[in-house]
Each structure stands twice: as C-alpha cells, then as structure tokens.
Image (cartoon, rainbow, N blue to C red; front, side):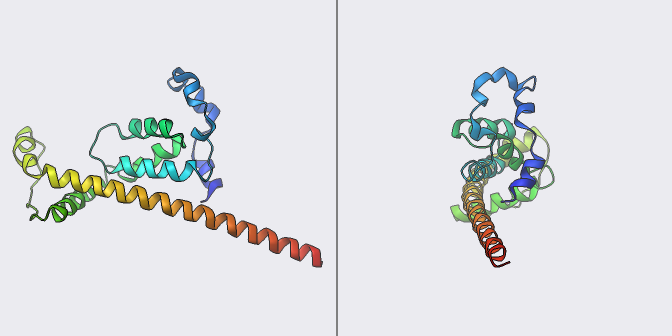
Length: 176
C-alpha cells in the first residue's frame, strides 16, 4: 500500500484531535490505531468504508467513523473510502445493485422510471425495495471482503518488495 501517499492525503492526527467538533470526544479518539496506518488498520478501514459506501443509508461518513472507532481502525481512511460511491456513481451502482438483487431473488427486474416524488416512493419503490436492498447488501459485503483482502495482499507484497530491495542493496554494498 502506498503509505507515504496516504499519509500526505490524510490530515494530521493532532490537527484532527484538536478540531473544535472532534475535541468533544475526549480520549475516545486517542487510540493509536485510529490514526496510524499499519497492516491491520488500513485494510480494516478500507473494508468499513466500502461496506458503508454501498448501503442506501444517510450519513455514510458518520457511520464509517463510528464503525472505525468501534473496530479500532483508521478513521480518516474509512471516511474517505466511503466517497467511492458518490453523487456521480450512485445511480449506476444502485441500478446494478437492484439487478443483482433481482437475479439473486430469481425475479424479473422491473423497468423502473425514476421520479423525485412522494408518490413514486410509496408506489414504485414498494415493489422494488427487496431486490434493491439485497443487491446493496451483497455489493457491500463483496466489496468489503475483496477490498480487505486486496489491501492486505498489496501490503504484504510491498513489504516483501522493500525487503528484497534492501537485501540487494546490502549485497551491492558488501561487494563494492
């Protein structure tokens, strides 16, 4: 995992701890794993962010932060990962989730025109909510598991690569 890049992108832990709103949580936010990036906290925070991102719930960032605190993984990374599903990607993601849920339930997906009305919500959504939620849950679980495993594998690969580079450097220095 490109740890240096992530450290540059994520705000400093002391600045976040001293933030006007976050300082109200006191020592709850002082656990080192909530801010440090290591082989345990990074994959866990990616998994949390991906899991929350594909659920049709409000307050994604707050949910990701709360889960990160409970599971003692990196808060900023969990919150940032939620933005994989954003206003630009949400429509195709939810469309795919609905079709995946319909496929799992073995029902034919309805051709659903979307309207921003209360009538649409009460009539049309009432017909599609089950496959939609099942698809969202499936997408959340699969992406969280794959994200966790991929980040763990990348982390191990990077460590092995840096060990090999150090070993080669030592060989070159010992010969010369």
